[in-house]
Length: 267
Ligand code: SF4
Ligand code: SF4
Image (cartoon, rainbow, N blue to C red; front, side, top):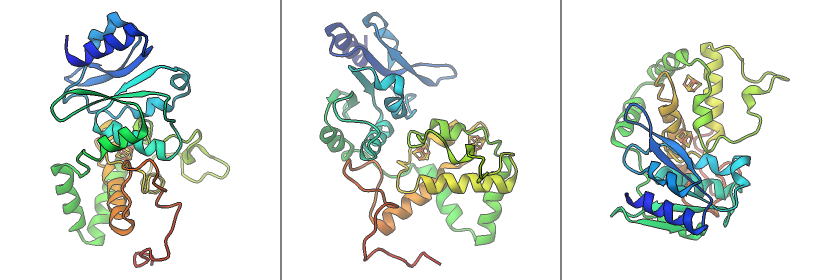
């Protein structure tokens, strides 16, 4: 029995928790989320490099909110989302416990937002090498080349909204794409409508994207749409010193202003 299985067994047996949200072995070498309610099912749980999904979104689902004694097994992306969701009042202190891991692989229980925030401060917040390289390639393009790049990518989008469903920061009960009076975003999947959908998504996530890449991982067509929200996240940091998922008390970059804010990007 590994560490996370042992810990889960103890928490469920002692009654400290009645639900553990974590990961189990899936198909194709991937992990998938699992809900464990009985100590005898603790052996299902795993935690390794395959557990890269961001599962923070479960915490604000109504059916989960009603569970009073729950814990979530959190990778770094999930932890950052928890901080961002807390700053947006979507989840509340004391409603859940976090089972996180130290660099040495030791399990730690984080109960207060302050503890979670402190642990998050020790994590790496940058992009991975592959995303950095693709971002640099796109940044080096001329405006026309960049337009062509995204036009080509958007032309493939089938508007399945898996990217939206998988993003913990997309929690509006009614998304703008589902509003039809007026119809802000065209329903069919054509290049212009797809462009509008993706620009809208990127702007709604401005200053809120914690750069987990879950949206792109969920896309059945492998569209690099995470780079759009990453770009806005990098701009938020560069121009407004705002990094999502780092402070429970942070105000959203689009909901606040300072008189000394940069305005040179407004044209
Ligand atoms: S990378 Fe994608 S899934 Fe993750 S927070 Fe940003 S927009 Fe959401
Ligand atoms: S998951 Fe991919 S195909 Fe589906 S809406 Fe998002 S970008 Fe388009």
